[in-house]
Image (cartoon, rainbow, N blue to C red; front, side, top):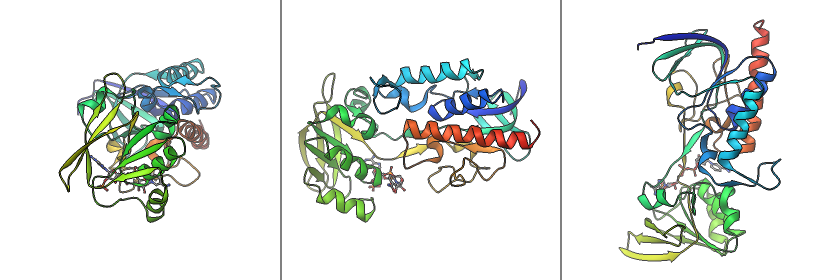
Length: 314
Ligand code: NDP
């Protein structure tokens, strides 16, 4: 690795979703002079959603990208140093911790907060990409409300898909649930709930061929792979719930993770297996994944980091 610059910081925050920015706000107010690197998608997953109506404090709702600009402004106003750049590798084997930005700049840090989030997995169809934000969504809890009283489809068969299908069934006329195999991966109790819900229609052995619609979702074209039969189902929204990928690859040689790559934190804290490295937000949360829970965990991480640094005499 070639490095052409080096800098030491007290607290480095990696990631710029609600978790990272909230950690930056708290850390800056605690005078820890945090430096935050935003990563490849400044603002994180909320920048690819439309309206956010469930974040407290915005009584009229707010556009996701706008909300993240507000978070960034608040962190900057408190004195956080927000920078564009991607953490490309780390070395947590000794202190101070080493983090390389954009494969060229070396940052050494006394404490690190990992807030790199997760990315939703997509099927990869061009029509899915084209209608993203116009009825195609990877978050039923965020966007389901906009389709109340409508027909919707959801693809996936894990616990997330089951949970989201149940959530949608309470507000939509019918939920067309597309399952690629003859069985679901979701836990038995979730499957039972799905199968007992009269307005969830399960399509077994079914793949999505295309999402149809000019400027908004109007239907999905499905293929039953067992019977080789095609059907078109009119729907107003298409939810993708086939899993998330935590953005944790660069930490894997050092930080303890579960089998899916989610960072393991000590319950009720943001502490990882490495003293002085903290994790918050979706990179360590596969269950709740909400902006407000990510922000809350960012606050926890900043408070944990502050305690750690002050014990070191900072
Ligand atoms: P999972 O990886 O468990 O499930 C993904 C689902 O998407 C699978 O059914 C899979 O099908 C399907 N899928 C994957 N790729 C495609 C594709 N290209 N086309 C169609 N279908 C596809 O992800 P989840 O997000 O559901 O869950 C992640 C983890 O979080 C799990 O451990 C889960 O138990 C946990 N979780 C727990 C909750 C709770 O306890 N309340 C709530 C939510 C999640 P296939 O089965 O054929 O591979």
